[in-house]
Length: 427
Image (cartoon, rainbow, N blue to C red; front, side):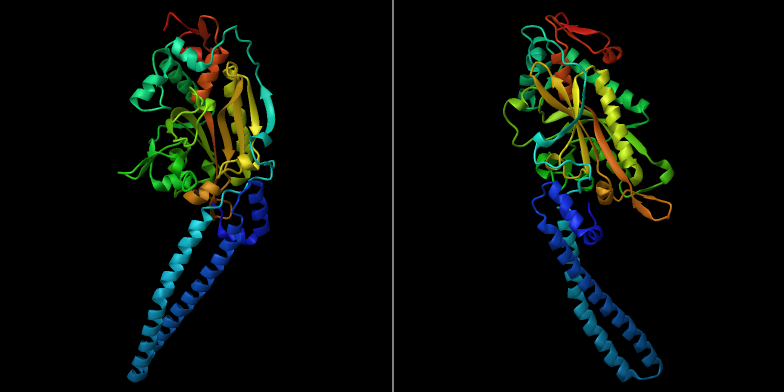
């Protein structure tokens, strides 16, 4: 969350950077400053009244000591009048402070100077590509047909049990999913990330802290009885582990990883792009999160990008890395890189990871701080990335490794899976 102090000191810069993000309500910046002016006036008036009350109260004591009771009584009446005027002033100040807070959370994070201008995914910049696209055999099938043919995933059964977007994995499909999760976690922990298994539901404060509320409220599943939200990503519970804490500078960077199922309503999604595993309401994902000192966050971002890239390389998947333009970035992000893998049977790119630096935006909301050299608490910078999201990775692995009667298993996964291929005999 941006601070009103920063907005006041850098008003033109804030407006310029919000324009890069194609934010439509830049008028809020001026309205925020005007509202803060009102808050300051009310605050000053309140402080003046309290100062007068304290001064007169002290005088009353002195008058009473001198036996000047009549004058003391007059001063008491003045105090009562001041207190009567203070009560509505205090209420008005509280209302304005709430309005100011509510307006502040409507502003997204400012994009980094590195963010390219643009309005849509077409304006994203390809940083680099890697891997080799496979030559598929004649009659190659998309993953939803392969899943049925090899009895790996049952989309119709998931629709029966729950609804569309909730597939059922079975047999070698379930085993391959479990193998990928374990492989991703082991890869992350070997790189120094501490593993967590967090709750899969969070409270409102946690959802607000990472920026899901109020921006993405309609995209989350909500348990009305208990006022909990099903998590859309492990980023939410994992980052909130350090909410309202002051960490030691010597403990930075803090590196965390977690596997969780993720739940997203995906309201408004339809058509061919949501078929099979391309877009689900429930899916598995392994996440990496870092808390860093501000001056080291972009170094950490590049480190995380290389980490995810190596993971995809070891799966032998063709991929590309995109730097997102301002109009395609998330609400809370300052800079985001997307990873896409090429799905050969569908002949399209599938997003499998986003790696983002949020700078101090989330930390301000969650009050995650550290004491720097000056001894004053200041916000850490937070970063996170998918390492990796399972559905589209699995879709690409099935499609890109298919042969006439088998599906080859990538070498990196074989120690977990226990075989180098899946055959029709296994079905």
